[in-house]
Length: 201
Image 1: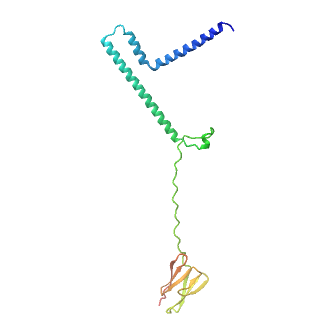
Image 2: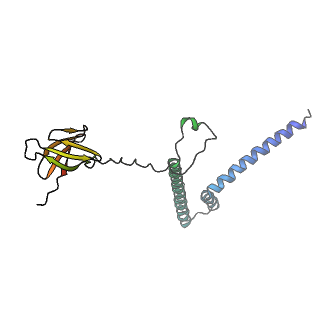
């Protein structure tokens, strides 16, 4: 190894260190122009300081402090706004499951989640009603007896019933009068009437 090579390496390291220090000074000078200008004016006017110059120096210091505090307030406001925007974006993002949180290929969206629709109230079916009376009055025997007998037709079927009789386990004859026959539909305990037509004399 030649004796000049370590010297060259040392010179290169010193040059890199000097360049880094110069870069730091340049960055500091750009960030604080008011302080650099203030120090420069103090060095220039140090030899012949006047009362009005002192006043100007004091006012420039006040202006520099005001500018520095204003820039700090702007930086704080900008950071607060950025934090609020970031929090809002995180709230809009759909939450990830434990499995998908560690999966880099999981599809995620920044769109707000769809609104949750309340389930519709179930529609209650109408209460059951008795079917129309399938019987038609045909005639009767012993209308003035204690248990008169009535002829009722149901399609091709002819029935002879009296009060208290049960028809097909669905209808019970309650009463017989001159104007109608009262039946009870047993599944729903609903009363129905079979009208007796009047005979014109």
